[in-house]
Length: 271
Image 1: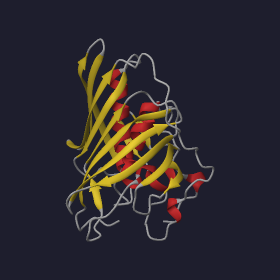
Image 2 (image 1 turned 135 degrees about the vertical axis):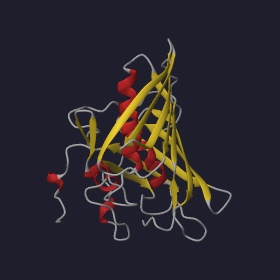
Image 3 (image 1 turned 45 degrees about the vertical axis):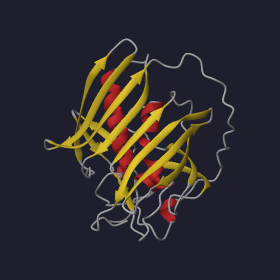
Image 4 (image 1 turned 120 degrees about the vertical axis):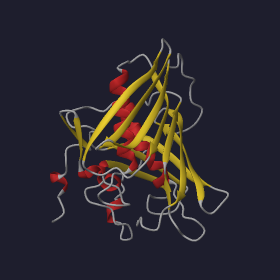
């Protein structure tokens, strides 16, 4: 099948049809072209959480996503539940499943918003004018269309998503999360948060790639802009386990952090 031209790409990462969610090619990741990238998984779980909560007087302080299995680029079901719905706090869970099997799940903590933000003393790097083109890299077989190369806009300050970190990259979501809907800032940053592992990646001592099994995003406040600056690096004390840690900033300053548990990828996963 010939590659699609950019003007033929899907309009969004997901299409909602009745009670089901159809993943489009824009969700595809580089590990296997029939399997979703972790970013759309996080974004879809956040979408289900926010729709279930249905409140605008709280902000998400923590989102934790566990990826239990590869999520296929196919028809999926989502479910969500409010575990606590208090005056100043709430806890909401969600999951993605197919044919009764849970493939990924998330839990989130929501708190009253900050009453008064302190002025940031940190200077935030300007957003470069040139857009990166990961899909043009000769050594990485990105699907086209796919998440890394086509669903996000990357503006590199240091490093790249194709070379070992640390890296410093501005990123924004370049397509709607769900067709016909305008994603909230929370949904946007949730869809981006898994990219810390791409910005800051490194391989093991014997040059084996790491893959992350979870994502935890901690936010100090709601994002002020669609652009998020990822300052990412990998930390480890062994050859098989690691943690990618990311400091998140937006155009107003410090926003939060992302942590991703990592393990050396199985031999049958090719990058």
